[in-house]
Image 1 (cartoon, one colour):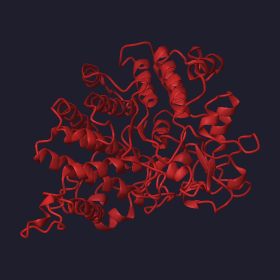
Image 2 (cartoon, one colour):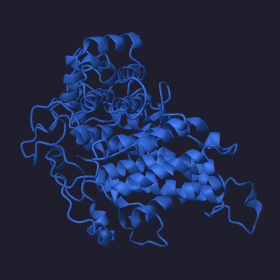
Image 3 (tube, one colour):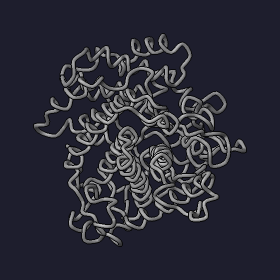
Image 4 (tube, one colour):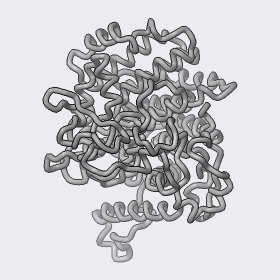
Length: 503
């Protein structure tokens, strides 16, 4: 892990160096304006880059990528959102679930590289007395650290990034990290009550200086941490729920959190999702080897869900998908549907981190479980409606009302009587709403609740199991550079070694 930390730092220093070259003190013969120092590598510069990289990591893209291989593609495929077309050879390791120690290496290193940048932004901001910027970095870090824990389980946390002290950081227990992330978010929320420097609104490429929205974002992440632990025996979220309610609640309608540092339809400047699943700057498909999975197409089509035309395109008037893991028979990319304008709008679109409706589904489940006050049906239907609005469905509110009233899997009368049944009912609609938008969340929900109808499992006859892996294996780079720490965790298996919240 030290190797990737150093490479990310070098990239950060290079960026800061270029920007620092315009300093008016360039005539000072005792100061080299092109030399990187603590003075010109400011937390503002690091934060803007780090926040942009969080946007990249949300879909699994590497910083500066355009149409590159996505290291989280497996999640899109595993949960039934996307599939390989017939243009290229089938990825055997991924589609057979026979993953190895190299499988998650890129995702690990890129996630930790971004977390290192956020750590540096927080540390330097606090040293400068800028608690607001530090709080923003801590909130983004909490989101990404939860994603890492949900993917790998126990990971380096308390000793991570302190390379001058800990050359080989230990692996903290996943439950301990979750608990500390709650405390970190509490601190970040308090920091957001401070007066922000005038530069914050410009530096903040996420919420553009809206500190109240940052606090709601933090509360939403706090609730996401709680929701993930719903199946842990004896779990009681009351204390954390009280904090959330006391500090303004979670993100609601029209309050999506996204990143946009100035994306444009230029090479290496496109918004991450569009640049990787939309079109290149020359107008060609960016994801020539991927198409909608027939699994999600069948769910959307069988319920006459109008969102289908916002998620995907048609070919000859029909929605044509692919079967994940099928060795032969999948159509070529030119003969298959593609990703629609509801999610792949333009090169300059915002890159979502938490869409408004996703937060509203968290709240609906919390209400159904009796954790938060309110009416579960009302919250559930509001979340579905917000999904229609967010995607740009024509006459969205009316279309959503019709869908809810006439669709068995959306009509609350079919939700069941128990909190667990209602949670699964909500999870299915959340799964549909976040189609191609948050595959990591869908994978986590399936591992937590096992709610998806049959049919999403790979068609690859070489598959190791008829169920999704519970986690990824630790990357080979950790066994090479941090062997003692990773080996102390013990033997890991993708089907039997559970993350603490998995039932």
